[in-house]
Image (cartoon, rainbow, N blue to C red; front, side, top):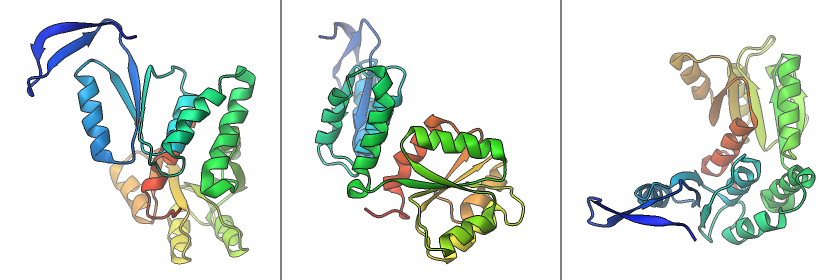
Length: 242
C-alpha cells in the first residue's frame, strides 16, 4: 500500500494530481518506445522516479545489479530476449543469499540469450589494465570473453572462424586501430554488436569512430553500468538478429 495525498493542482489533461508522501521508484519494461514515454510521463505526474528497459534481459540485469530496488515494476508480457513472464519469475527466484545473487544473474543472462547459447564477447584493447578490467566486468555478468591486443588480432581471430555476440573495441591501438578494425570487420560481414570504448570525448572523433560501423560508444573507464547500457541497446541494433 503506497500512501498518497490529493493535491489541488491538476495536470493539463484535467486529471487530479496525487502526490506521494514518500518518494518511490518504478521500472518500466516495454519494447515500444512510445509506450515507455507515455507511462513515464504519467507516473512522473505522481512524483514517481522512473527507469526503463526495452527487453526482459535488460530489466533483469538492472533489477539484479541495482543498489536500490524498484518499488513498482510494470512489465509488458511480449518482450524480446526474455519475455514478461520470465522477468516476473526471475526476481522471485533470486531472493536467496547475496553470495548467490551474482551467479544467478549471470546464469539468467546466458540462459535467456539466443535460446540458451553462451553469450560471448571479444575485448580489443592494447592496455593490459583495461584488458583485465573489461575481462572481469564481463566475467562477473557471466559473459564468456577473449582478449585481442590490437585490431589486427581481432581480424585474425575472426578469420579463424570465431564469432562473438559483443565486441568491445578500443579506438587507439598499435598495428591496427579500432576505426580500421571496425571497418574491416563490417566489410567481412561481421554483424556482432560492436561498442567503441575510448577516452576520446571530442564529438568529431566519436562521430568518426561511429561511422566506421559501431553500434554504440562508451567513454572509458568502462563500468558494469555501461556494459548494462550496451546490453540494453542490443535488441534495437540491426547488427543482431534473434
